[in-house]
Length: 149
Image (cartoon, rainbow, N blue to C red; front, side):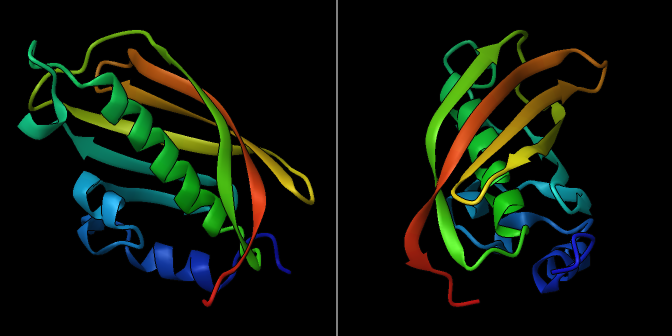
């Protein structure tokens, strides 16, 4: 397979600049980010911090930050063009700064290693001022679920 492009990457590239509310996962639809960059093993998207993503202090809830990273990494792994679905084995997240209600954050996820059965990826959520809000490392394992598309 061409490591620079495939039909999944081509589809995601066609979605750049559009809200991901019509995306692949129902949860991803709720997160509703906007893709900014799509490449083999790398995705960049923006997310606006909405009221339903915050904790009582009006800052991004840690669970939502984790979900954003996990979901976007899942899309990146899907875009690798593999025949089977992958699921997270672990997700280690460091929370470093707060993102407040109304903030726009940029999320970058990258493939670190793609083995036959295990994929290792990292991600980070960054504020417009460059501060890292959260960063993660994760391992995903191939399942027995064959992807229909």
